[in-house]
Amino acid sequence: MLKRRYSYTVLRYVHDPLTAEFVNVGLVVHFPESPLGPAVLKAGTRNTIARMRDMFPDLDRAAFSATMRTINRMLTKLADQLALEGMIVSKGDALTFARQVLPSDDSSLQWGPVGSGVAEDPDKTFTRLYGRFVTKYDVRGVQRRSDEEIWKPVRQRLEERQLPVTLEPKTIVGIDDKIEFQHAWKNGAWHVYEPVSLDLADADGIYRKVHRWLGQLTSVAPDASEDFHPYFIVGAPSDPTLESAYRRALKILKKSPGNVEVFEETEIDKLVDRIEDEIRLHRADH
Image 1 (cartoon, rainbow, N blue to C red):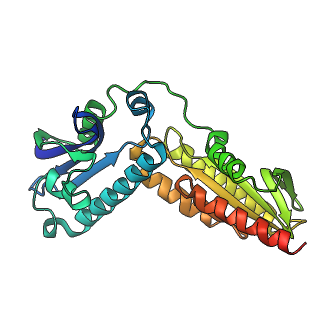
Image 2 (cartoon, one colour; image 1 turned 90 degrees about the vertical axis):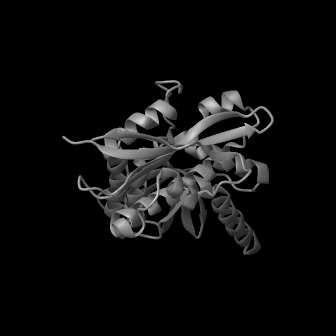
Image 3 (cartoon, rainbow, N blue to C red; image 1 turned 60 degrees about the horizontal axis):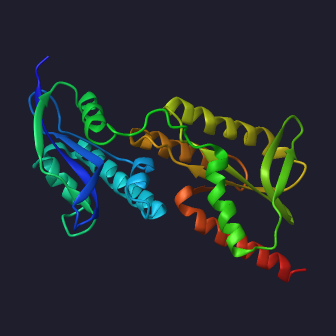
């Protein structure tokens, strides 16, 4: 098979401009349109910070993760646009496209110099370069986050605000099935909160987990013995290549019957604000 030319640029996190110490946190690879195939843009950013936390103990984990997810979404959108419009937007190298999402400035996130090469397969090339530049020195075999780890920051924020409510397990019973939620309180209807970690190894695992919840709610919600309002707090996968599977999984979960609300882990403060408002209304009515 004939090989195509490509260019790439690496996204760096520069923690201290004085020392210029940095960690690679993302990658953009661009294959221009050619007789061998259409233009392709592949990109991804990390959203795990175990190695970075060891190097930079004062790193703001929540802010960093939110920034990485925003950049990743914007790069994905740009890649989709390139796939649809081809030559209309495909002129330039990887750095040209990278700067459309994150312009060069004096911030802690900086694009590295442009590299280039030749290869046959864009997907395999991106995976190889991402492993070489971004995840090469990561600790292998780190356990992925559990549902309880997704819930932990919610619990911490509830404790910090000293809200006068006790969350307890609650089983919602239908005619033929039942669902047990780990965190619930009653305000007319039951408000039930369930953490769902989608920090899994592959897309199939992500889809299986949300389909399991979709199936349970479909079985119980129409004839539940008590009114209930489910809230899901969803943790994203650590692997940036699973971003599209994660986005699709959120859409599947939102299709569940009943008054289902889905919060990403970056929206925890929004969820806790809702809980606090509902508790205040409940206390005002009693």
